[in-house]
Length: 77
Image (cartoon, rainbow, N blue to C red):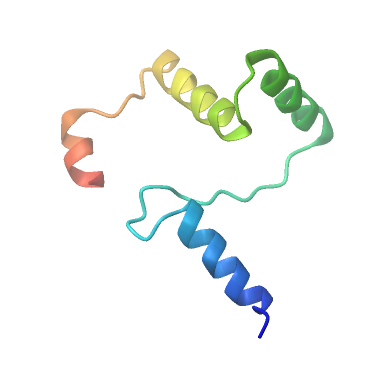
């Protein structure tokens, strides 16, 4: 018997997000210009969209002085 859409989605989420929850699924709508910039970064840097987004957020946090400190690490783990 074939899997239902819900079963396929559940299997995909378990494989890519993981049961332990080390990853988080982000779903968002962005404007076309931002999408095009993301695509250019993916091609230029030769890394995945996920890596581009993670890198951009990390670099912005560092530039703004918003890195996670030791106290926050304990709170979020």
